[in-house]
Image (cartoon, rainbow, N blue to C red; front, side, top):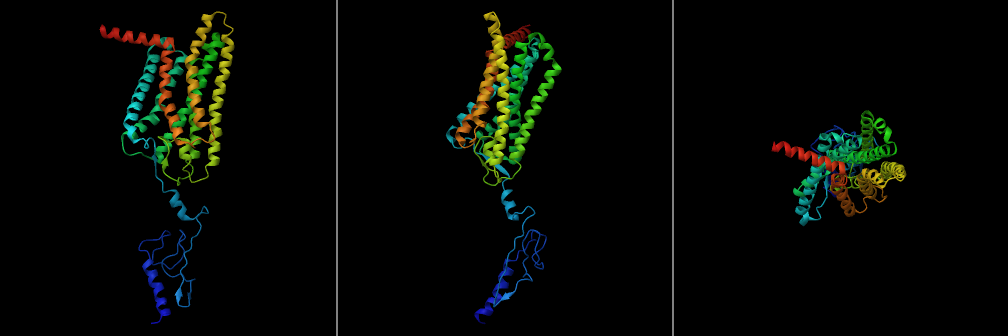
Length: 386
């Protein structure tokens, strides 16, 4: 047999070897008639439209466009990521035990302090005022805020696995952003409460009556979680294909947005302006409240009266400066996420250290809370002695 006739039989034999034994994507098996399947692949047999040219056989593979105008194989690559790997502190293997002990101790102190504040305000009737009820809600919000990130971070420091599912990452980001935004709005509400108490003391009990306080609290948390829902939906609306490594110890906006298959510049800009709206508007409203508060305090004739009025605002003002300062540094930068190491350091401060300041500041700098704490402890010791 000559060379040309040998090539005639080589082609079909190679096609037979290439013929798959399984069903093709369109439901057409390898013994089909050669028609195109919905997935865009021709079946194993020779298509009727193809002809022998000379002594050889040319086989053409046709890809039909997918319903969205993209090749079907691109969807496979985009949906291949099913979980993320939180890098966290994996670049510091020698310090993992030390960091675990430090963060665990800080977390326990934070949790104990916030639970103590909530308990004192609930038990002591002299603290059943709007100011301290908002403080109890703030402590509860801080407790939930730390529960979202710190236990997971401690587990990753202690265990080998640092993986988190996409659904778990979405849930963590939603609650983290929802509680963070609610925290901003709640601090704004507490600033308004101080404004009414100092500038309109005679009308305070009418303006800040329980039904109004409950309604304002509901608006605060509904607004915070609505913003979180918008931002989380924008980030997770497209699949992830660049990588599965999140350069953070929890699912924050910037490091997760980097992994999106879609163009992230427009989403990043929209989230940036939404963050400005939340942080700056809240801070400006607090600033406006304190402008009226300072104007009212300077008109008080006695120095003791001025000191007493300002002392009720000192703790709140301290928490506001720390909280909004950290939020501005991490979220109000156009290049947020450009320096992962720096972002992680700042994130440690506002997820671990800042929640610790709330019980410390409100316990040490608020005389009424200290007195109520001593009274509650004395009552407890007296009942045990009896």
